[in-house]
Image 1 (tube, rainbow, N blue to C red):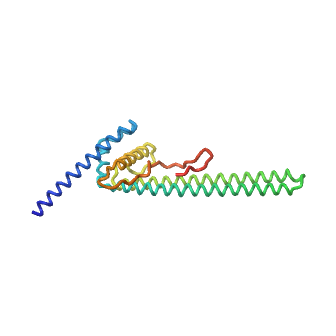
Image 2: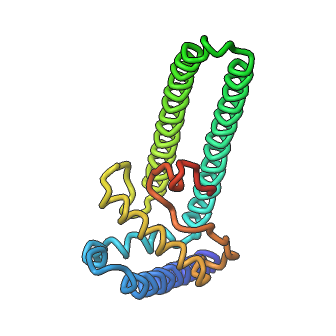
Image 3: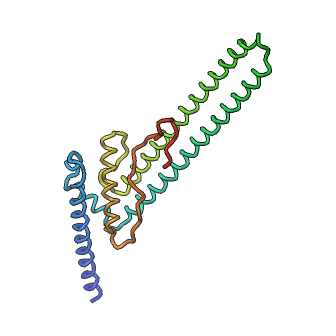
Length: 220
């Protein structure tokens, strides 16, 4: 009797899983229609079916949430590092300006042209140093964000999420971003195998060092 009951339970579980897969697949097919046609064509029935399978137990929603939280912490840390560097440069410029003004005030008129030439050379050297340090910081930011994106891709690939693998191809990155957007929207609709809403923080972005027109970093 116990074996019979166990078999019935397995059949019931299988039926529930099939129903759950169908619901997720139907929801994905509906959401795909909101994407640009160029991406709709790349998201085949098989890809969406595989994605629905990966989402069945809700684990992928938790993985995505964790990855986004790590990404946001990384972006905030990099932003603060660049902000500190900008503050250091601001202090350096102010100190140099004050130093030059004091030197000129105590300089004899006939020596002033020579002093101003030396000060101009010093200023140019400092500005060159500042530019190099800013470029180095921006390269560090891009490299770190690239590494974080690769970690996300690798983690989702290992989790069996269709469409994810390590790549730097812009079109593939955009496709993966759209896949994550589908997952986020499913989560918002409560399609999580009975799990509570995770409140995904937003769309995952390809690597970039975002700054305003003055070169200041845009806060995450």
